[in-house]
Image (cartoon, rainbow, N blue to C red):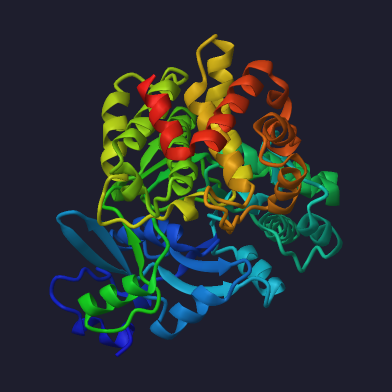
Length: 489
């Protein structure tokens, strides 16, 4: 039996289900990037909003490329399970906020039309850092990106997230309609401002008037999102289906913790997010930097060095006391670069992160976190590194994490086995690695010279020295010994 609207009443008593009449819900949000994170985070919040009476805020999800999620969820009326796992047990909840889904590549014009519908008041995004077709170091639109080039020549049949947003906003402007709010939920620095810059730069390439109209009328609130969501495995599907007593083709696994901080700036209204636990603030930046430089930076350090050290998951890596101390030290050294609102307890936040990373029930693969590192490094590791350099502080810990990324993108592990590197710059990075060879004194400068990742920071002598030394230790001693040596110093 397949999970679906007709058999919700057959779920076991302990399974939470939509606490509202789903037939009365209408769409108010289009979400670009229908992946596991959105379904375990924003969609859960909207599910709570619907239960509170906000029935005009249902979600239409859009996968920009793959039909897999649509094909899995459509036969079960877009219902799916969120399984929150902790050492004490797992809580299962069926989410009903997702009303429909589309695959952008199949019918791009239909998605543009849906986004232009006046009933849609928010377009939210989780397309990962690489989905914005920008240069991470500068935050500007990459005008040479293949999808940007395509979209500028096929305005009504776009491929990229910026292309869809601009095409839909242009149609709303032509029809005399108010713009929707663009709500970025990805780990970009100053994500609202960054996406506004990308979108308006794209729009201005089509029409300066359109770019100005977007600047003057649309809202791009910044956000900070936090929940660990591993990739769903076949074993996860089996476990969720067993708990439900019926088949769920694509449940999502997550942790009990969740956080969403949102700048309260919307053009056409919003759901009652505060009632669903969202923190509405006037300035998200301190919270965003806190998460990027504490959680995401230490996560990346564990991912690259843990993978090289032979650990499959973050929890496995954290069982090694030297790696656990590495994560703690990344956080400690980044914390001094933060200026937080009064009352923020950074020590408690760091302690909670270490506990979450150690969750034995959460199988978050180091390989998964290691994806798209060229897009992630500037926000997660390089910003804090630059701030520490400006203050004359040591950077050995962050340098080892950066060196771990460099060693990883050579695409060969410590035992000579191939690494499946998933990164927009994978081919370029692998080419530089082949040319330099496994020699830290050649490889580190070559990769630090990749402008899209490091920008001017790549020429900083102190960074070059520290990263080259760290990379040399990785080649000489391996990741486990290099981490132990750093922590023991």
